[in-house]
Length: 298
Image 1 (cartoon, one colour):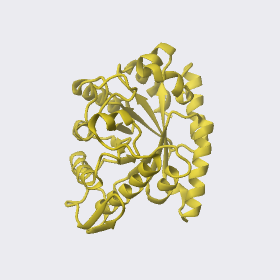
Image 2: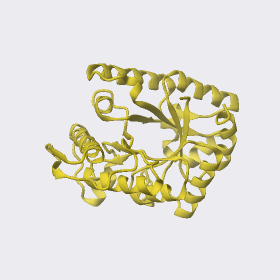
Image 3: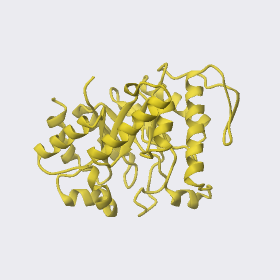
Image 4: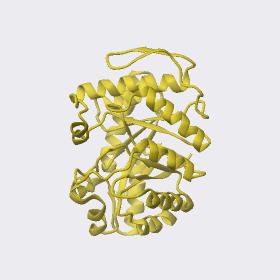
């Protein structure tokens, strides 16, 4: 299978009408995947206008007919795995078997603090993620689930009905080389990392391969994806990402059409199976319209 292309749609500073229009256009352009994120506040710490992820994921499933419907990524720190497993099952039924679920350790401390949710150490958040993905995987794929960890317990637990897909894809998001990539190697069907250069992606892809070797898993069984920005001009980049623009620049497609296509080729050479264009409002649909015929006709 060749390189796949998706669009990751942030839920901040937008409306459902705007998102529905955007999703429709993305699907019509021929992209393979659309995903949402999981935040309660804007991800750039500038405001609190942000739509809720599970509800948006369900809307995405209902408003599309062909693309896969993903989440990059649900926060294991404030989403109980049993609640998520049941939610994604229903979303899979709404979509006719096109849903994916992504899980991450969580990092937006301001959201935790605002809602009085404990924000533990990085190590503990990764412990929570590792337990969560095991619980979600079992609930989605086993008739009965039993699990006893430090953070979650399942006792004769069921998730019925099961998803339409026998093995609904489970993603792990993040670039941590010691723990996150090890968790992905052990439990994930796919892995995603945002806003890094092709060289950094290649290095992390190699680390994932090393973890796969340790757990005796074929690394080719894990889909590897990168989220990249798209900005033909610096103004476009700053309108979308504001103060974060300079920090994410290594993972942004920019320049001429030929330079952007060349950058995509570098990610493919680095081991990417899927490239997701990460968009935030204001939606630069003209940039997406310009890119689509360059890559989707290949």
